[in-house]
Image (cartoon, rainbow, N blue to C red; front, side, top):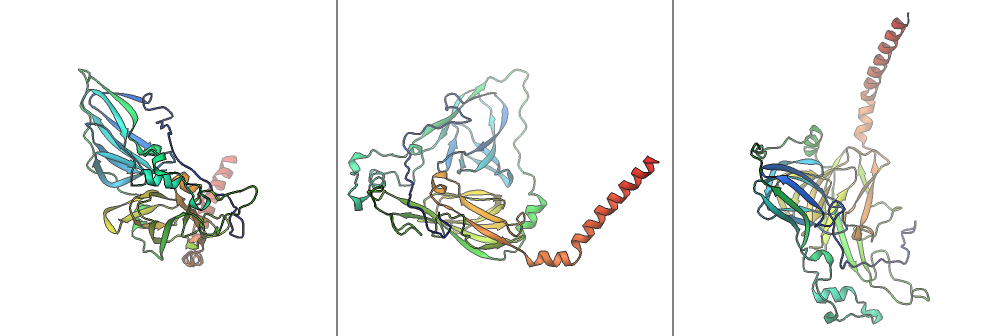
Length: 367
């Protein structure tokens, strides 16, 4: 993107076919864990992938989710399947109480975009006469839209001297004082953040694609932007105030196109999903928009005036095509008032007293 906000005439095009999936750098058949029967195991999983949300399940076992993105949940959640969005992290407990071999599965991801018609349409561009007939495409055409193995777990016979595992927790530690305080902080603004998909030209600020000898035809293009703009490192999406919180409605346009919403240096509390209040609001830094929208309480207590508050879709195939933005962080007038009241001077005096005492001791020791 040029400094004046115009975009260079290059639109990337991607399509995921037969990709191989790995766990800890190994194929599922080679990613093997061995446990004794009666063992309770804490798994820490991260989705380091370009794909949409991964759904994991394990035959004859349930999961107790205890944390997301390194932060404990308000209460443990017992589920039959784990969902991890791109860039997301999740921690969960599993008790292996019966011997056997169990294969953890990755579910197929299908929200209706993997039909022969849509697969063919994604590879076509009628204005230039480039059309792929539906019968020429075999669905599913997305590699992550088929069930696959994730890893293998061997549960060995329980030894005669084995002890029963500790019971699963019924409660979790409370959030830190910082997060509890932020949850009670009144928002100073209400913003709408739209994650936009634009098929064909014009794509947001790109009006057309220049056709010349080097570019003889317009390529099939899909733009991914935020608030109807492709990412531009020179143009801010607006401002936020340091040491404040805001309410953001994060919306997917069109709906049901998944976007893992991620913020840098600013945690957010998920309060609504598709307009429905969350029973136990929880803190994360990454959360997927799977339906239409989420409403979050986002705070900037770790940012200072002059910083950038960056946020983006954590699916690299969307991020690389422009789905990112930032707000300029401006000074909070309340911070100036606190400084005038001498809050900073008191801290300096305490430091000086400590230094003075240390010097005095050194002098005494020296004599």
